[in-house]
Image (cartoon, rainbow, N blue to C red):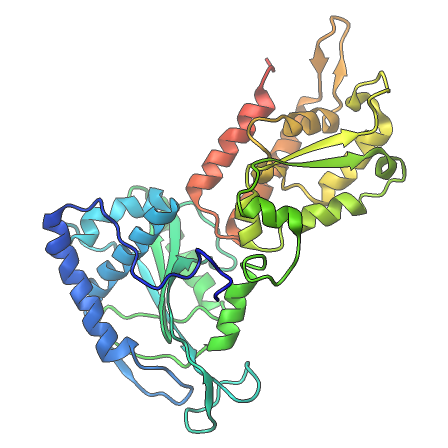
Length: 391
C-alpha cells in the first residue's frame, strides 16, 4: 500500500465548509454515535463462526453513513446530484426515505491456507486482519439507473452498502422492486439491515486478502501490477493529451489488432478509465499524400467499421478540444459531398451510431461506477463535438 501515494491516508479527511453550529451540533452527535458503534461492535473482527447480534439505532446509523458518504463524494466530486438532496436528512430535519436500502457485508481475517476459504476463528492462525476505513462507490449487478447512488462505508470486517435513491423523482421508487430483486440475486450483496435495530451479523463473504486484491485490481498502475509508460504518465498528470495514430499499414492489412490492443488497455481498470477520460485524440496516419478525404477511402471506412463494431467506447476518452468523434461519425454514416460542395450523410446511420456510443457510455458508467454527473458532462461534450459545424 506504500506504493499507492494519494490513495492511502493516515488521518481523517477534513471538510472545512460546514458551519460551526452544524459541525459542533447535529453532525458531532452523528460522529459520536459512529464512534460508539465502532468501539462496541465494528472494532471486532467477524469470522465464519461468529454469532453476534448487531444492535443499532437505524435512523442515526443511516444518517451517519450518509454523512460519511456525502463528504467523501464531495471530496471526489461524484454522486452529488443525488447525495446533495440528503443534507436536511443528514441533519435530521427531514425523515429518511422509505426506499433507502442499507446492506451489511462482512469480511473475515485471512487465515493460513487458501484465501478463498473462510475457516472458523479457532481453526488456524491469522495472517492478515481487515484493518481499514474505506469509503467509495460500488454497483449492483444487473441494475443500472440514473436515479440511484451507490456508496460503501467499510470499517474493518463491516462493509455497509448504501443504496441511495433520488428523492426528487418518482423513478427511484418505481425501480426499488427491481433493485431488491437484483440485490437478492447477487453473490456478495450482504444482508439488508432491518429498521427494527437488530440484525444477526452475516457470515463473511470474503477474507481480507481477497478483498484487498479486488481493490488492488482497480488500481493496477498505482500498485505497479502492470507496466505501461504512456498510461502511467497520463495518470500521473504529466500530460493532458494522448494521441493514438491508426497506421495506414494496419488499415491496408485489415488488421485492427494493434489499435484494439491499445483500446482494450483503456478499459482494464477503473483507475485507467477515469484517468484517461477526456485525454485521447485518435487520428488516421499515412494518407497525407492522398487527395481524397478519409470518408472517401473504402479501406479506411471498412477498418473503422470493424473497429467500432467491437469497441464503441469513444465518447468517454475523446479529448474535448479535438474532433475524432465527428470524423468517425462522418466515416460511419456514408459521408459525401453534394453538388454544392456541402457534406451530407445518412441520417439513419448517424442516429444508429450515436445511439450505440451513448449506450456504450452508459455501459462503462455502470461497470466502472462512473457518476451521473460525469456521464452527463461526457454526453454534452460529445454532442458539442458531433454537431459542430452541422446544420
